Each structure stands twice: as structure tokens, then as C-alpha cells.
Length: 492
Image (tube, rainbow, N blue to C red):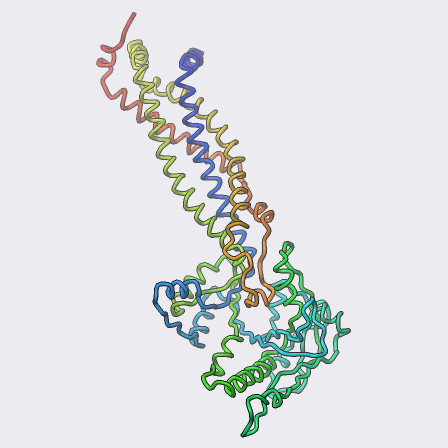
């Protein structure tokens, strides 16, 4: 009972100093707690974004680095990616499958396109395996019919009619069903030995290719798409077709040969066949786990030549991940800085408080109390004040961290986008893997989820800091012998 009375008297008698101690613990604790909570939320949100992202990657030239080198008056030599490099990357332990697709553009005068633009041009997506991962990994569903069989994809003798999968929009607009026949054509140039350049168009002919519809797909776009995505990417996907790679190769060969023949007839300094083909072939890697994407990139960059990088479905909000990574680094540094600051600040405050009360403690020593008991009473005083301050800081820091997270997302998600209208026609977009999140969805992912276990850990961490500060200050004050403290005491 005497101990409780002494604690009550001490706490009420030193209101100003106790309030200063409370304020220091509360304010620094608020910063430390907020940094800890934000750090956990940032890591959880970033992992959730990466976890829900389709684990798809394609190779593209690193134009950011290349353009920077040009700006610095250095003209880099970009090496080609050969099959050895592709298969070496494909053998990394993170890779579930390697897929290649040929993406030619073909023509039709009879088909009606979905959307306002009626150009008669359609993209073809080449398929190389029976694992129709466009449906398995993306937003495409086979609503009617089937996908390709192994026999249809790997034929020894190529038939005249090739299987094709079309969108439900194209099917409805053109009255097509399973089993319907579709005809596309490529242009070819049949030039005589002697001709006039002005009559060049007269020698253009058409090569027709027959297809039979075996499947009809539906495309389920992201929940939140802007006008640009609606008008370009979404419309483009609905106007494209899936065909075997062998037929895609045929279409591409005719298209490329026509371009080369036509340009060569005008200018002999034209591009080669390889230059055109490499712009229409894409290698796609599918990983086992989206969370392995960073590890895969690190291992792949050690294999790749300079000036190549990967395109992923996180492109649309890579700036958000970058901001979160930066915030994670900052909060880590602030956490440790303010932890040290709290130790120093509480030590100094407790030290000066004890220094003013050393005469009081000398009296207790003269009455036979041990230094151990005096320290215990001092620590209990600090513990009571610290507990109240820490509890308040934990409660308020939860709301503060949530507000700060929403502020970062709302202000950086739209206004600081790297490219609000990313380059259309990238493979990721064409295959239906564009991963779009709205600011509201990002806010929902940024969950401030601190369990009772973590609160207890935070509390024990603060108590440890107070204990270290308290015992350090106590040792500094009471390092003198009891007799020296007694001689300084003012008795009576």
C-alpha cells in the first residue's frame, strides 16, 4: 500500500515533467509505430500486387536506356537474341513454360470488325501448344467449341483449311458459328522482268487462306478500364483471331515478302526478311509463381546481352510499386532513426529528473531502502506513463498510417503515372494480360492489418527501450556510493 501511495504522490507532484515524458514517448512512438505499420502494409500490398499479377513476361529492347545513351551521344550496339539465350532462360527453375507466338496482320473484305474502325485488317495470334494459356492465364474464356488439338498444331502435311478461334463479338456481327468457313488474304507482287514503277499496283495479287471456326471466345476485361483501354486494347483483342503457328508463319511469310518485294522495287536499300520477321515473333515465359518475377529477372539479366528488358503485366502501375519500394526504404530508415532518438531522449529526460530527485532518493537510502527497490519504483513510474503514451500512439498511428497510404495512392496512382496511355499493340495487351487496378482497388489492397500479437510486440519493444533508458540513467546517477549521495542530501 505504501508503494502505491508513493507512486501516486510522485506522479501527481511531478505533473509537468511527467507530461513532458508522456509527450516525448507519445510523439516519437507515433512516428515509430506509423513507420512500422506502413512498412508492413507496403510489403503486404506490393506482394499482393505481384501475387495477383499474371506471371507472364516478354522481351523488349530497353528503350529507356538506349534513348539515354543516344542523349549522351553514345550509340549502343543492341545484340540479337538467339535461340541459345532463349532456351537458357527457359531452363531457369522459375519458368513453368516457354511459349512463342507469331503475330501477323491479315486482310478480309467480307468480315465486319467490332468497333467504329472498319479497316479490313485483323491481327492473328499464333498458338504453339495445346495448353491454351491465353485462356488459362488471361481474361479469355472459350464460350463455345474447343481449343486446338496436338494434331492441328503439329502437322507433317499442311492442309488448305486451318482451324481458327474467334471472339463472340466477331461471331455475332458476321453470323458465324462453330464450323463456319472464313477467308482471309495476303498480298503478293507478281512482277514481270520489265515494268514501270507507276504501274506497280497493277501487279498486286491476292493469296487466299481458308479457315474453319472451332472455338468462340469471350473476353472479360479488367473491372476498371479507361476510355483509352476501351477504344484501343479492348477493341483490338475482340478483333483478333487465334490460329496455329504454322498458318501464322504462312501469313507472315507472304506479308513480309510482299513488303520486301514492294520496297525493293522502289528502293534497293530495304530491310531484310529477318528484320521484318523479328518484329512479328514474340517469346513468352510463364512462371510458376508471380512472386518469383524479381528472382527470374535477376537470373535472366545475367544471361541477356545489354539493352534488353522484360515487359510484364505490372507495367500499368509499376510507378506505384516503385513508390511503395521507395516508401519501404524510407520507413525502414526512419524507424531505426527514431528508435535511437527515443532511447536518447527518454534517457536524458529520465536522467535530469533523477538528478533533481537524487536528494529524495538519498533519504530513502538512509532509511534502509535498497537501490534495487528505488529503481523498481522509478521504472514503475516510467512504465505507467509510457504504457498510456504507447497505447495512445498505437491507436492513433493506425489511422495516421491508413490516411498516409491513401494519400500516396490517390496522389501518385494517377498524377505520377509513368505513361497514362501505354504503347498500344504490345504483346501483353494483345494477349489479354494487361493487369489494371483502379485507385480504389489499390486502397483496398493497402490494408492496415495489425494483429494483437503485433501490438504486443510493439508494446514490448517500447518497454524494452524505456527499460534501457531507465537503467542507463539510474546507473549514471547512482554510480556514486551511498555515502556520497547521503552527504548531498538536504535533511530537515
